[in-house]
Length: 245
Ligand SMILES: C[S@@+](CC[C@H](N)C(=O)[O-])C[C@H]1O[C@@H](n2cnc3c(N)ncnc32)[C@H](O)[C@@H]1O
Image (cartoon, rainbow, N blue to C red; front, side, top):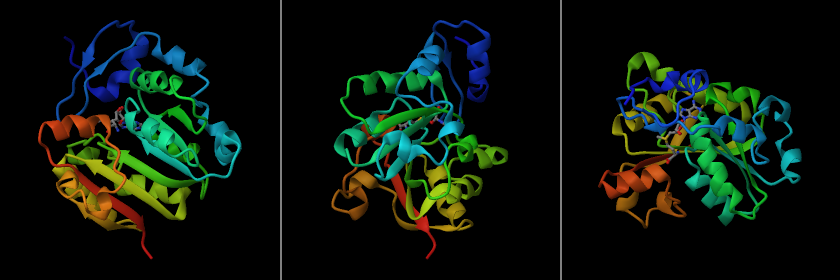
């Protein structure tokens, strides 16, 4: 088994013709098995728009309607967003994922569905301002985002002030950010960090599944990681943030 830093993965996967290698990073990052040919399959897929710069400000045209647009950043294998898209045909969904080997699994799920409201982008969310224009997105989902435990990497966390500044640039005025994680350190960081942005936390819980009658639990759709960690007995934290009034 070869150990690599996950942030070195995309280069490694392109340079070398790996067949089955697990990439492991400490501090809560995921294991990733390289899937040969996934990059090419994604480029060819009718469900992806990897030339996202061409669609900035035009996503409603792409979907062919004025329905709200909800995005999930770091969607993994896409269980959450494909479920939501199936449940809510009047909402357009865009799933964003950095790694081809993961995104390909979402595309496989997507092929099985007869829906027209779900697209994917393979991108590092650090470039998200190149994909969306002002007021283009109504809701952002962040589920079990990578923790980046070292302080010097804090700005890479998807709930950092740097990312909230990006969200501010394309989220509608009363747009919502929802974040779920079992990582208490990352959650505590996020609660504090959001205070330093234009957003505020309007609801949160340290144990989402512990109180199914709470408003914050209603309509909950489980993600892959949520299922895994809930089965292990980890409490799931969730927060909902909106712009400060
Ligand atoms: C721990 S997994 C969670 C997957 C899924 N959201 C879930 O809850 O089951 C985090 C995912 O986010 C992706 N990711 C992390 N940072 C990202 C970034 N900057 N841009 C796009 N995707 C990212 C990772 O590749 C990984 O697939």
